Length: 220
Image (cartoon, rainbow, N blue to C red; front, side, top):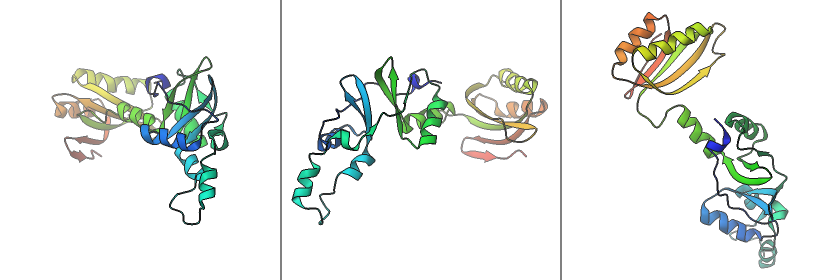
């Protein structure tokens, strides 16, 4: 999966000389947590709601004078933005973008193509992709299998699902589950789960855990 499939397009932006009060109003009006800062077509920074909270005094703070509030109202985006933000391309693999965000503790990355801002990828976008990959929004059975590390074992597993006419809605692989096995988790739909279970065991595949229709059981 690539960033372009999950990024938010038509991104709102602000200019570096825009007052912070206007930036805050824009973000609150559109319910966004981060906004790129643009000078013409050039990306020069990014501002988060946390940046705003740190830079702007609270009107409820009794120690803040009217003069300080007035001065705060003249603060511009350039003063508090994170300059020269790290960006990704629409063709960047989603896991690479997620790793960048995790490593640098970013909540989002601006997406740039040929020097133009074309989108933004956020934590929410990453979570949505994760849910889609796991088939979380679709009904079905979730099965964890301990599968030998060999290619033959993985092929045999997929043949069982094909034989039992199961639709695979999502799949993840944890290759370092143990020294001898990888852990494969699948979300599947089909009419005969009992047949599937029997066929998996018959093929020498170990069911670690199975969850279906609100019930969970460990197969051992």
